[in-house]
Image (cartoon, rainbow, N blue to C red):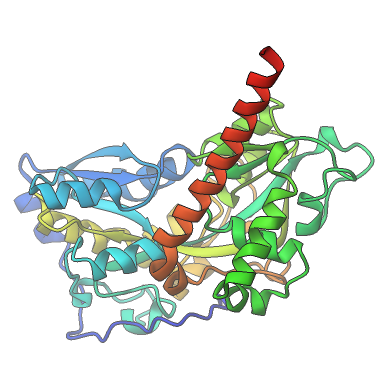
Length: 381
């Protein structure tokens, strides 16, 4: 069973029972859904586990679109009254914040089916994975990984090693956002996992995190899309990079890349489905949510990427990778060996502080750009 803690409690179920999937087919006709996610190996896992079976069951076609996260695009559509997306895959903090801002439709939890073992949905989903406006699918984590060929004498082992460019030289890849970077910086600077968010609640703690990021700033290559980190490693542009654990697993298992995941200080999170307010195919989107979050579908996704399902009844069904034949259980973020020093993303913290810390982070990046530009002008003057 997944060992999870979270501040957000499961939304009260107002009714019991499951949705009748057979009714979908009769209303399918020429319907389609536009489903927005993160691309690459992750979207492929959704296509194989959710999209194809749903289309086969209902006749409803699915158009996949990719984005890089955040609420800006969905907010623009909702505020313009011109919503193009029917369903969006979100990080927890964005799901909570978007619901608070009225960007998403309310979801009646009565649509969610029982587990295959008969467990009612309200007891089967892990705590916090169903909210007023979103339904969870996976547990994933931000880790860092390195190219083993860069360190023949032995690679990094800890989060502190990621920030040690003397002992482990080479460029670092990092996502172009403060989220997870600030947590990892404090862990690398010696802050215990249970004190990280308390530290980030203070100006001194934020300063300390940015000071640690300053220590490797000149060595960082920034990425934005989840497919970029494994490519940066494969191209030799970086020696190590933060990444979504499933993307690196896919590169290792399917593409035979000589990469190694370091689980120390992993920051784990949930991803959830939400329906934008005013979605053109709202009812069909709700049917898709119910279909894709049943026991078998969530377990099926784990056969394509190493993200843990959010239903307890799905966990015993996790088997081998669909292509590589590797047992998937040990590669999940929540596997006991990987979870020892994990920290859960505090989605309430980020829902409250995202704008403030984004502004601080972007100003920090601009200061570096100005410094580099000044140095270049000096050399050419």
